[in-house]
Image (cartoon, rainbow, N blue to C red):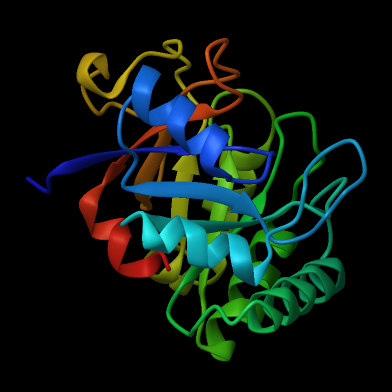
Length: 216
């Protein structure tokens, strides 16, 4: 059994204030999920300075691409994938790191998009990842259909599950690692078990330590 590691993600920039809040009130993250780009009123985008700060604290960066309003169509996935790779390279994120498409449970999703994301990202040297909800919405069906079409989706993709949501808690009180999964093969290596902490503006996650090899 792979060991489990604790981490957080945030739409806000990681600065000393936020870092100190998290370490004092919740725990010491092994990784921190952050967004590759700035979206007004949604997420502040990663900078090279912020990446240096996160890494200087002994944490790894989990890069998230969220310039998406749905996940439909192969060509749309190609465009999104190329954009994610562009931003990762701009920020100096090296190859073999997973880039996670943020697919919300209210998005339309189809197998062509899921396959397109994998088939666009993987040849660039990065790893394709999906933040998703395997219970609500259509991601699980689309993903399993994409796996039938191309097994590389299951082999190369890394899944970050948003279910079940057991509630925010500290690292010490984190639940046993039991993320919900699609009904087909997949590397479900990250689980966001708590959202919107009151103490500090972060979400709380557990991960299979194997994912650390694919975080920066």
